[in-house]
Image (cartoon, rainbow, N blue to C red; front, side, top):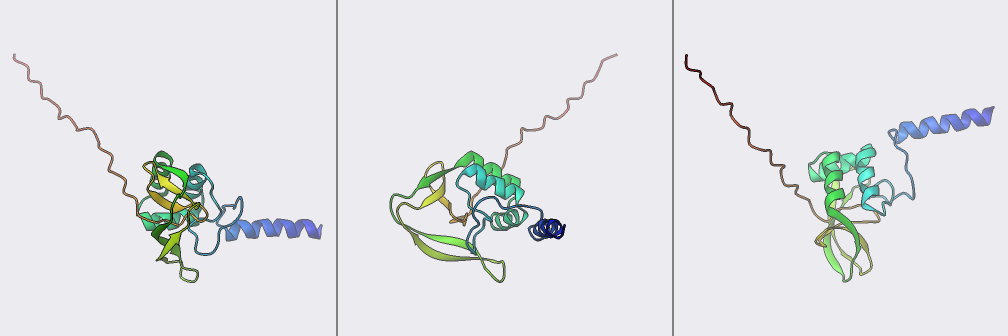
Length: 154
């Protein structure tokens, strides 16, 4: 009976500490935007929408809602492998502060990255750390037609 209550307590503690979101798969290194490794665009988008901490990190960085970010990634991103070295700015989360910092890194050929459809590298697959901001073009709304007044002749 003691073992059972210990297990229940551990589950409750995990839910409380993780904000109700469970990590599936290997966790990422400190400084990562992601909680767990995401090997596909869909897995990345799922974390952005479903993990509160991940959602807050990306929303703060991109100044967009989690749903906007996930939708953009699903429509415009793919996983690719770098063919040549890439010198880029990499953004990461500070261990103690939780603030977003950046540093310049050279990524080796063979590094898997999330990239835009045109091949522009967007973020590192192993941690989800972005290389650049994304700009989502505003959705154009159709023009609103003014109501035409109808006059009747009597």
